[in-house]
Image 1 (spheres, rainbow over the protein chains, first blue to last red):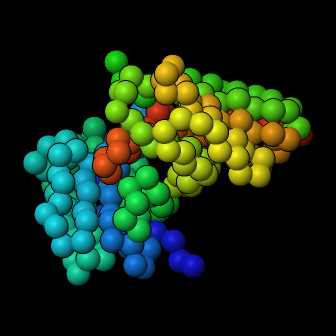
Image 2: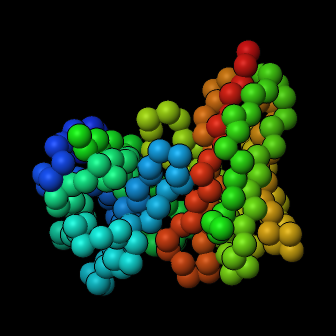
Image 3: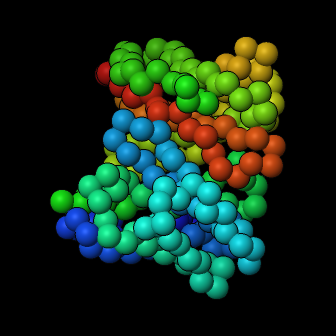
Length: 113
Length: 111
């Protein structure tokens, strides 16, 4: 079946611009997660959505980062006024409710120049 | 100190060798232990998960958890060039949804 899809696969933007990253989870998966993978770093948790509950935003590094999930499916991660330290691969994952079973998309590689 | 430590390698082995990959952790509340494989420029792929201590086998892969030592391992038997990738360990608490990842070990299996 179809896995998690993310778009765009690559994004190059100038410092100070806003960017939107999209995630389409696996159909039927109730939970959705965003992680960030920086060069030389492990995956860093950003935000978690479960059904219609309020998201857990505890991992967002600053108030320039926000995310929403519409209709319990597609999610968008928005980074405002991008900085060079935002350059990373942004990974989306979904799970059928069992937290330990997360399936990742291919990621969006963001480069801020 | 990070909660999860993993030697970044690289680890290079000949085809057919047994590979041992390891992680240590500091949070005794971790109960779920996962191994992911990540090919270059791809997303992580879930290989196996284990709950609490013990062993789990799936084909050529065996995962071991020793909670008393806060140490987990992944063994790959009869390694193949297609196993060349970065292997990430991840852990979570019983009701924790945010996975805590190691930085990954880069593995190269040479023909």
